[in-house]
Length: 114
Image: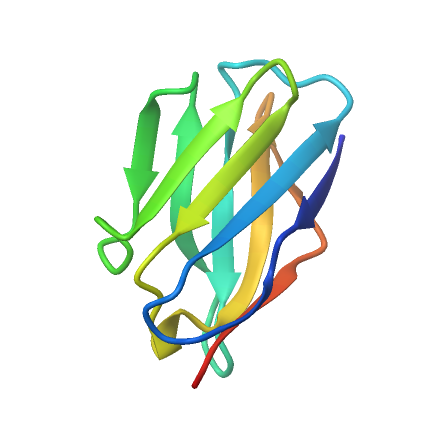
């Protein structure tokens, strides 16, 4: 399974971005997909994950601002990021857990700055 992410970029504080990640290979709706991020000088941390289209889990720091969703037919997971803050600046990694194995995408840079 390979994960291809897109949608990062530069945005001003308070702005929005939408990340997308498409999986190639076999992935079921019951498999977990989602996003992690690594900010400069920090460890990688969970942002949001989703299973079966409705069972979503968020980090406290993004709750109410970010929304994770997925299209199982397209094997794609999305991350809608609103009310972005400078502390959201990080490399965002797409993630999937399939049959007890973790898969990671290549990462996409999100920079929140005025």
